[in-house]
Length: 610
Image (cartoon, one colour):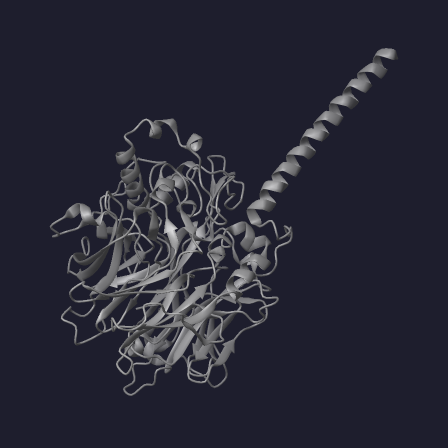
């Protein structure tokens, strides 16, 4: 009996030790997780209805299916939509499984999910919709699903990350939104290399993507764990007859617009026909290239404008014109028509830009890349930081000669999207409309953990933004500091205008995503039309429904007004756990029709109607 009592006491002590260890680990994980979300926002273990809109679609089958319209009584889908297709970009797969089928790795940021392209083909006379979906068969898709690991650096997730769904955890001494990595975290194999070669080749590797033969469709390289992902999952562009996906790098993925098959790659950094091929190594670029829409321009219709940042001994921003060709496998011819020297440690993040009849306008916001933080396998978001003490610089270039016409400054802000830019002859200025934020917290609030469990942080970031207008004088005698004004009280993101009618010209109407209630909405739950002349808004919303970006499709009728057309959006219906295609009358924001999607679709980013 004595031995039994002693044995029982030993077992009890061991049990207490194990319980203590487990509780300690749980507390530690909880602290890390809470810090990753936001120290000012308590973790919410139950997801709100909006948080359910972020889910993994990695196991979703690829289908082709005809969808029937559910039209509002007395309404008809415009027949002129027939023959066109709405394409949507979905960051769809976040979780990757091992050979046993168990989850093994997970992306952490909304912008990281593997790209799935949706096509809604409007059939003849708009009688119905044919739906299809396919993942882009990129190297990231093949390798991640092949070995259940994260093989490439993504925007917000390092290569070889595991399942812990945390956001950035700044290290001691880091800035507010800038996780930095001390030297002892950099792999020894990298430290042993020449520092100059290490810096610039590593930066190039991050943004050039995996070892692929651009234009050839070759995705056979077995290099993993090095470089930025070729998962190009943000937007679309059409170069001649070739449709590509775009992101904030110079790499684009070519896909078949009928079958959605992945055909290959196009990289602006290939520098075809340029005198200095090394000048265009593809570092940051814009996910929103803009078309030449002006008959007065010497450039052929369909010419795309963009920029490519260059990291090297002398860092600069290169201005590009991208001309269509008839070769689908190598569909572009590029021309560098201007450049601007920048400090290497102050290379700006520029997600979009403006284009008028005569000028290309860049906003040099104080959100900078630090090239030394790009070394190794760290997320791109870790190399970005916001400097509130620095002003925003506006660069106005002649779009024909590349000459820098004017440099101006305004108070600092963060932004994603230009809404429009146009010339005002009466005041000899360029007017620029953008949606601005006081800092870059909205970027970090887009990690999946705060999105799903801390709606207060996202709401705080979005509602702090404002629709801003800057009037940039062209005269060198005018003041060089421009304060900017609030153009409308509307809060909206992912903006659209009637690009065919007013792109690069003065506009009246703007469409975008907003919120039903700035105090309680936990994500975009409304589509907003803003009239800039009256500062009035028309809103579409439905309880528990979360729309994607609303794409404006202009009416082809002669004499059509600026707001004559339709808006098309994919909407997630949280109570029904389903998604539907929504068609709105853009003039009055009334519903024309809906079409049920074959399966629920997670939050998606940009789209295009072709």
